[in-house]
Length: 151
Image (cartoon, helix red, strand yellow):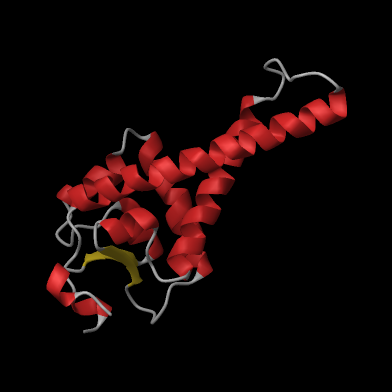
């Protein structure tokens, strides 16, 4: 069955997958913070003590999220959380995902979260159940019922 024939995933499945993925992303961020602190100590000889600017922390967080999601989406359209909830990201008009779609989706996804999640809740009101980042990147998240999953 073609990916385009599957139904659009409901919002609760998307949010549940995000919660699963956030555990992995937080672990990666903690690991990156340890590495950054180690580099700081190696170069300055003392612990940072709050001297690392917040902008660096947020940049590292965005970069980790971008690479985690982009890597997962380009390698099969699913993150670990998406696999657990049987949902998949597909391109609406292209046969496969492109890095430009992933970049746009990640950027608009962060913006959607910053405005109190409005970009995600938009899926409740859209006829095709699309969020802002779905519309911007011309993608959609499909739900693959248990008996219909790809082998």
